Image (cartoon, rainbow, N blue to C red; front, side, top):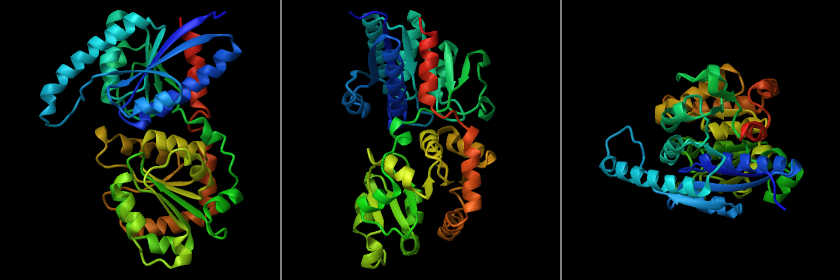
Length: 378
């Protein structure tokens, strides 16, 4: 017989960065609920036709898609049509809330959360929100007054926005469980991918879509890097064929030590945990996974990121001395190469980075949020 039934709705979409943390929290809630003899009915709400639908349904969760417009801060003809989509999404949100009557709604961010969060406010459904970056995104700025709790990915002092202090809770950013539980040893890793065991591993990734500016820099460094190191390169699907088909003046022996992926899914924990150095953007989720894996890194913030949030994230990491930060604007291949070669061979510098990571973020943010939710949910 089911007892102590709670209903929870998780909202978030647009990018995998809004979905993966939600799934990590849901996983932790399920573990705690099982021990406490709670039964929880989960519903996931995302965009109509969004990439999140497939990801969520693979986890065996119920999914509802709503229409929503994007809150753009630049000129676009869609700025005229999107308000109508937001209104439709608001109506759909009302219907979902009325028919499901959840005890709690958790909104991760992205423009799909705005109509749903506003519907929660109007129907007085308890709403909590999570902000990954070191400044509130536009959707969370709108929802902040209506939220019962604001979970922060970075400590409060990192934020440049005005926060409602009575509501905040520093939780860090949830990381997939597999990052902590990678089972592939370094020896098995080399064997699995047929790599030269005498070379150290550099892992380059720019988020789920890749990173054009980083790809251009790596393009000019491939032959130099692969002569000394193994290079694992997540290019983004748009650039995958170019890097797979290019010869880059590599001999056959070195070419085996250059692995190209358009997109990395389930293998991500293997690459993160077996890298000797990581090169990445400063997206909050990428940064959280690098620190969870306790790996030295070179962080190159995206200069065009909304609200300059990646630069703010990177500045915080630099202050805490947990990463080497290079600005995209003035970065040359030679400058990047010097930083790579210095860090990967300087144990003192990389060990100091890893040591400094100990108290930057909570170790298991998904668990921290799950416990706090279950402690406070009515």
